[in-house]
Length: 505
Ligand SMILES: [Zn+2]
Ligand SMILES: [Zn+2]
Ligand SMILES: [Zn+2]
Image (cartoon, rainbow, N blue to C red; front, side, top):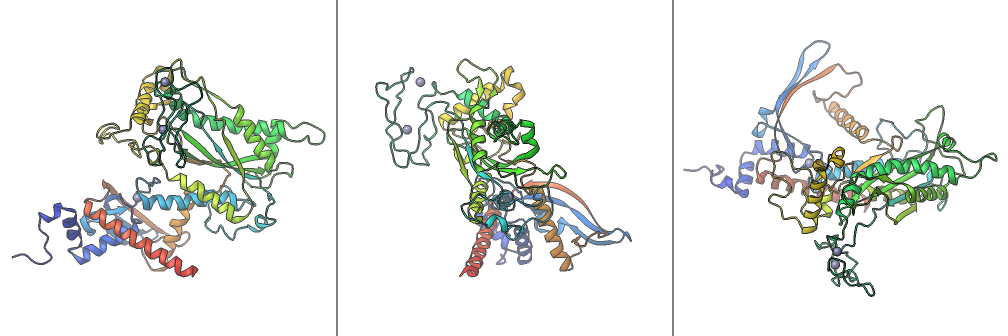
């Protein structure tokens, strides 16, 4: 005879069976759902097994012990904290919120010491915003722009043109030297896998594209140097003297936050939030307003001046590939208005890109480099032809002696791009580490108030935490668990949205 809540061993090999097995024991199920919630409804949490205890440092007394053997399945679930939307939407949402704070930290409060400050930095709205809000239409004390640096062309590609025709033929020239048409009358939709593919793979400079991705970090580093030179060249004479680069560096600082965005054609663009600060020689960490002559027009002109001139020499790979990397002709620089709403919008715009990966723009590519125990990049995947041609190009270049230093073999999944998707200059604004520290401190303080022996809330507390943990695995053990966790996450988000809607009604 079978008890009503006894799960058939056969049933648990199906997703539904796994879900029923999870819910069969009420107490175990409750404990498991608390874990899922603490892990922020992460879809691929890290499973840890081990134990921990808190010790009173003064007396040596053990105050509390914890062992994962008491948890369902003997494991503790911890959020994966991945930034990529395609890997873990709940963790990416949290990352996006953190990124927003970092970007907004630099645009919203730009006076006093904003910089390498590791205090709790979520009090953005009320923090010295007063002089930013003044005089709509006026630039305010810190000139700020949002600039998009694009990649040059590496050959004509299929494009989505809002319902329009992809490419019309140029008069007199219908075919390339390889006999491929130079036109395409299709009306591609954004999801069309053809978008971004070259009209002729033999005409396209795929090696140049990969090398450009591999050098965009260096190109940006040099661009910043050129911006200081341009500021000197374009600045008005001071006290009747032309301004030297050295003088500019004494007076001005270019602070920035940037995000790399992958295009359908496989190259990255940089979205850069650039800000001109003054320099306090007695306290370089202070973020102060620049002199009045360093206005938004000067910043805009200096960025354009630098972008048009800067280059990075590229390794020699074949006759067709470009010898230097440079920015594309399209440089979009927009002043950011001092109104708070505009600034918040700009921060949101950048934060959105921060959770994207190349795999979101180019179908078939994995979100991260396959681990040694996973199938390779091309195994079991059907990459669109132009994506496969690009990954093959990365591999070909990786084998060349002239490219050895680039370690391209490790960057096949990003088509040669080696940098961080999000980065900023040192004094731009609060750091992610500071945000995490603040959030953790807040949580611990909260728990200390609730009398939790695990919380180390009080300043200078004499409580030690001793732990011993091992990695038991990554992701939920069954698909049923994952489906349940996603359902919790949806319910949690809906409840939060309903609560927010209630607040604004
Ligand atoms: Zn996660
Ligand atoms: Zn087309
Ligand atoms: Zn051709």
